[in-house]
Length: 137
Image (tube, rainbow, N blue to C red; front, side, top):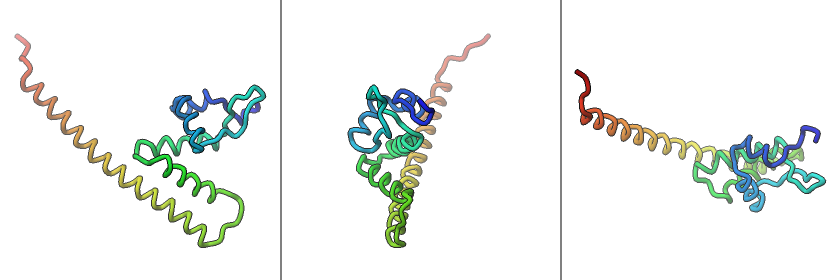
């Protein structure tokens, strides 16, 4: 191997995704291995890893596979070397802005949930401390 391609195990380790999850994303068309080895093993590039990282980051924010596909398609089209007219480029950028806004909203909701969870844990800790038997002489 020339160092440009990685097998699925290395990609799984780098992305912290299971082999099964990576294969599932391949089956759904979200990521396609860039090549196959002579033995038929999936081979991935840094670009493939970057795609998987986008997916990994979108999933906990509640984005659907279709939304992931839509965003990846928009970024692929923006990254393509061919010329885009101004209207098409603006439409793709607007698509990305929409996903950025949705992500920001989800992050804020998660912050609120985390804050409430921390308050709850602190309340329990306080109750435990109040009700624990005092040890000492």
